[in-house]
Image (cartoon, rainbow, N blue to C red; front, side, top):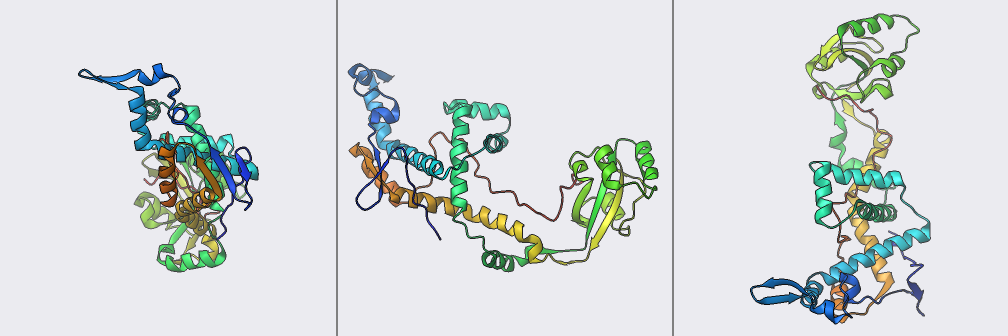
Length: 348
């Protein structure tokens, strides 16, 4: 498995051995936003407990001992990711960033809850978006370390073959209407040999999930739908159109495309699904491998002795990348392309 060797274009020079040097001459004042050089700031009270004052300097010292190394390592990791991505001319599009932000919002109960969590952490939406950008770039580079050769995919398929077994399946299209009269009118129109079910579904169906795909429901087993749908689908012959029937959301017409007997999906048919699964399962490990190699190839010099030991211990322990202001940024695996079934309507 190939491991990366980052080249930090803005902060790196090469020593005699060709190793990368990342000089982080950061004082505690820079890390924590406290102007240590100003005695007035250092002695400024942060809190009062009875008659005892807790000064900014005391607070800074406690924070440094508790979280200083982790915070600094997070900054180092972000620089490693951004610099290597810049060297490779990798980028995250605005669409990718927006999609990742939306995943973060989806993890909260509501958009208001998401905004409240950001506010609690003192983080703006723009700052959160930048964290998402770094995560996306890390995923793109780490994904290169995941072996998705046919040998690996075949081994995964053989190990999980039971998951690809299926009962008898139907592949069908459908159209949904708000009233019976509309459904009957379309059913009558379908008697014309020139009429195309898919085209009519795109134009007339009320089911937003499937209409853009011409009403394609994909392959499904009888248990996947309520009897009102399954009984109709499995009673038809291929290319036969059903009579109008009622479903919870209205009235429907269905066309059977084909019947697939019970069996096991062949490897070739699920290859891309397997690839997506392997990437999803191995990506967390690959992120760690990328960071381990990047940290070890970057010679990190920490000016503050109090942080130096913490940094070394964290690197030795292969600490994961956890940006300090991270609000549950989801590291999403890629969508499985080329699946064998189209989006299906909600199961009644």
